Image (cartoon, rainbow, N blue to C red; front, side, top):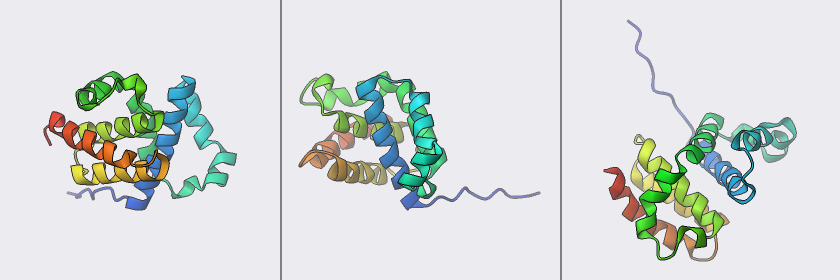
Length: 149
């Protein structure tokens, strides 16, 4: 009998996957372009070389990018009660980060919730508006209870 090893991944490659998923979801939210076409653009050779996609956990990137749009209504419903404004008034970057964080809290249970929230905070610090990381932290921390963490 052969024992299967756990799939290993690089935390740095996962972080990069989240960063590219954020950019792709942002593009999807603004353009309403087909998500499969956006995925193709991100995985095309010129983009791969230019953006160093070889350092990205591509399966994780694809999973986030293809699954979040399919579950967007459920994800939005999970964090909407904790917003201080309507969802359509959120900054598109904040919205994409909340969707990624909620998706991970709901479906990626092998990732500790503290890691999910920390990754979302870091995305907000890098890509978001000033102090948006505090907002993201508060919303995801309250949302995690919805997913029985």
